[in-house]
Image (cartoon, rainbow, N blue to C red; front, side):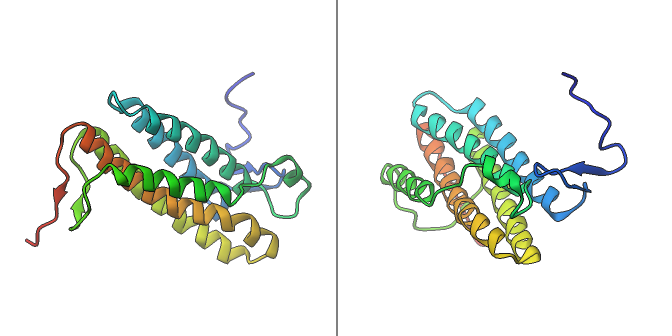
Length: 190
């Protein structure tokens, strides 16, 4: 199977549900940002230090979940293609909240704002967090633009998941700094 098809050479691409849309459409932009987030998380995983196996497994699971969310974004609501997609249950949000709480218990209480950075790996977690926030903004915009009940119910859990995921990535950055014996850099007014 060839990687290239030539089908997008004129600035259009196909959704999972079959429709052809402009590559600059908001829907493509939204799932493109999810793809970027998934790639950044892959880079983060490749840099995780020893002693972070739990985080590594969770991030691999998150990558699979993001791929699933991207499939929903690539599908027109109400199309027959939705029957091939697995819903993203609210339980994944609760699971992510539990992971945030577990990692947070191992960290010193946060009493001040911190700057993105610290170890190289923590810096990648912060980059992933900011890309995740962009994804959340795009999916919110897409949800408002299409305003259909089918889309609202489908994207609701994706939106909440992305919101929690950015929090999780923030905690991962702090956790990785702790494991790497690197201090979080406190923000100080200039």
